[in-house]
Length: 395
Figure 1 (cartoon, one colour):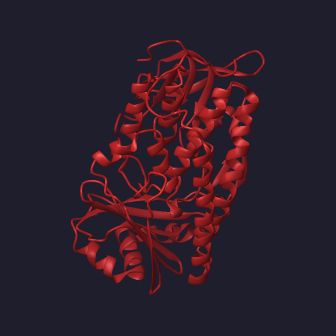
Figure 2 (cartoon, one colour; figure 1 turned 30 degrees about the vertical axis):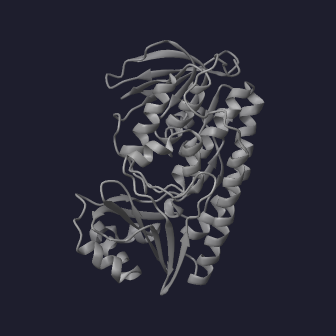
């Protein structure tokens, strides 16, 4: 049930990007409504991994201790395997970060939702934005929201944010164009296993295939394989398990043996792959954040970090209170992520030899450092849960 019929901001989507944006705005006193069609605490497709930028955001917002308290393993090394060559990178302690983390989405998403609720946002699950309300000038003035019974109610707002994923309904209703599309896409198959016995993140690469090993909650390890999308489409009739185990065996006999000897998943999950994109993400009375506005191939496991970063960039723009600031949010985001998107696209093409993909990872590391450097320049305006007097976005 929607508690009120007027808010400063409506957010469609209560996952990483939507819940974080709502939390940050509510902490600064805005009246925020968040709706999501899924149930509270439900799982979703994810590789779980947080990179340094994502961990830094949780630390800055005062939420990292809750991740640690959830028994999410501390990741202190990242190891890249290029054929027979292995390169281990230690996670150095700096800026309040002494490890990386990969929480299950059943841990991270409820934590962010609860933090948004504590800050004063109204969270309504099993409801979705089904239409947008436009003023005579074409400006977005609110949304129609419906639950399972499909009976819609109109809610007024100064701003509507689409944080509803790759196939965003809000973006579709807005007719938001894709400004740039990547050329390639990888497919992924993953499962969760107990007793794999590998500490830290491990990324394995062989021509035409990649494997990731990510320790997460409850003593489990997420093990995923990435394949060129065309191969997945051509060979999926062989079955997910066959494709998955073949890729494991090709990349790492050690990991293949560990998985076969482990307690296996109830089922494997698959993502068939979609090319990355930059979508038009700001306009009069609306904005897009997270995968709704920007998506890149999951082969580099950076999606959650992207969402947490962009949530703050958007929240800061909204609090400036002008359409021009929200437009600048998109410009800032695009300038930051375009190099990340381009490098990821080249990796997801699988059109590389091992020495080339190693160089691509070095380029990716440089861009991720630029991301962290940007986050470190931001002040602590969103730390803690204190609310200040209401500041509405532009009318």
